Image (cartoon, rainbow, N blue to C red; front, top):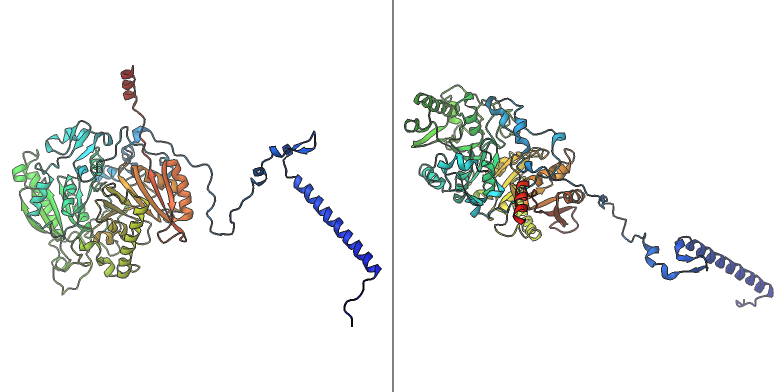
Length: 633
């Protein structure tokens, strides 16, 4: 069969009709396209008088201005950020030292019995200020440690009351534009160093067995300041009272301190936290109220820890005239203290001159066998958590130490022995070894320590000031877990306040103290018991995720801004969606920052927001402004 056949005239005619039809359809489609395209061209692009397009008046960007070439296929894209940032105005200049939970006016509403009115009372949520606490006029960056131990700018803490009231006791002196701290105290007129030397002759302060201390009624914290050179870190506290700025002075010096008082609720620290407790004429009625304050000291002291008392009534036989009290009164007070100490099974180690030292037992074996000499106080119930210390009432009972076998020696440490400093920092803490926190294994603890070394090393590439030795001194970790962040900074000249939020899944503050670090409990929906401008640097790991359904992020940020010094740094570690919102809010706080990738790279959802609080103060005081005007005229 022939495949190549001849085409007939009829077939040629059909093909011609087909080609014509296709051509008409193509032309119609082309004309329709022109008509539709012309409908999106602005009318201004044509001169209707001539019917000619004015191309020179029509920009190509006019056609493409609404085109979006971004990818829209990622389901994890963060939500859009509102274009208008929230603005937080400055508070009144009179609030430059505002401490919301220790407000004097609010305290008057509470009972004066056992000084309840002077302890922590926070405003209701709707009463909290929504403004930024200003720095006082003339505020300057504090002196760097260790110089700051001895000197501070007057403009930063403009109070001279202590220079008058404590003039003869050498607490603080005012000269020109700064304060000087000679290291004196009520009971150590020759200076804190000489006083600590006296203690060191009675108990060993140098072998690393004493690392954490608590100083009740600390004054300007010279005791804690001078213990630092002996590798002993002290949690100093005092109430906000007539000695207006004592804790503020301590913080300005770069010494750990908090506003606090022994009244009706427990101190915000776990049981078995401190190796040493100290009171130098701190005016606490130790023997009164069934000895409840000594029972609270006993709760927070480690097994084998020391309590040191100087001042009334110690050495009353020689000092009673200067104290303007009767011999009988002072003798009765000391007798009362001795009785309470025996009831707690404490052993009096020594009393020499103005110093008396007691030691807590290592365990309660002997204490239980001998009935403690007195039937009271009873041991606290087993359902009373000894580590619960956030708005927890003090009880007139003896906190039982963890059980040890009856066959054990009296020197066997209940709960486990800690290593001496500095090995203590990275050794597995007894609470972890004993399985008290089942979620944290020894391997997990050691892994966390290494992890935070890596993270802090990465942080220093983001914030060069964190890597600059001496730039930061007072550091806050808002969600410390087991203290890995602080441990990674142990070789730096800083101290870290490790906070365990009361909302955290695990109460790990006891582990932090067993490492030889210090810290406190805190609810970040409330203000911290400290002054404005306390910290040079704040670290917040997953804090905003933790509080997502509990309070507003701006409330937490305003508190961070209150306690952060001008020029201070912040690192917030959280989910990227959370950080986008946080960054938008911090624009209203006058923070400048950027979001950086996780140390493992950009594929991690957790990101890091690094920011710096900009320097600003209140405006020039009116009187000074008038004086300047006169001088110019």
